Image (cartoon, rainbow, N blue to C red):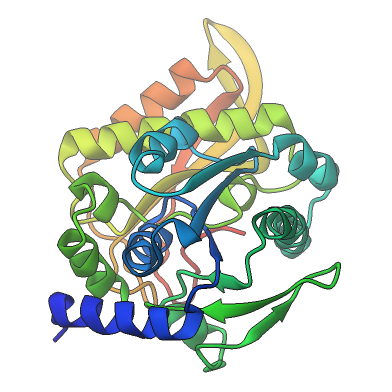
Length: 308
């Protein structure tokens, strides 16, 4: 059982011993893991930790402002607008794995520039246990990362032995807002893995709007505290519909809602039918490009939580 107070003390000592007087950077996504890792490391390093938030243009509605408002005064915070850089590279790409690789490459390029500007020698990551277990590799906690243009950073992973429920406990102990600690996980590639097929600004906008409706209705129903993840997926399929007595041909959106403890497995629970119907009605009424909404009922395994 995690004793958060003891864990924090030990982690601070380990970080100080590793980094010393050096400078570190961390990619702050606004998710639970990176947020907890940032605040924990800041306790050890103070302003020698630079928390870097990169807006890649694939964020949820209001995400950039939320992260900025939460951390700008709490951490040594840098906001990087790299939307054009990411979306230009992703233009025309359909394969989900290729999308992920491109996003990773561009992110590393952006992050390397920031690390050089800050003269940082260490990279803090919010890696947790399921990350490296699912990657089938127990990589040593402190190892080196050689970035594309020759910059070498030493990796520090202060919460890598914890599971998500333990990370949430730690976040509360560190004084993070409950809304931040309890928020659902969000994939690093963002909406790129929730838009099936080629990415366009229009399709990203549709997915972002649909996702916001799902989040609003789930919270209104009070299920945000029990569901692990809940979101909308914009498929590459178009379906005939009728809007205003006129035939329409628009996108199919799929709703994905699961319960889980650690993301290693996930189950689709029984969901309030009125909520599902409300979400469907709102998406088709408020987003003109969508004519049809479906519900995913597949557990993990055999399915993954995300669609791409």
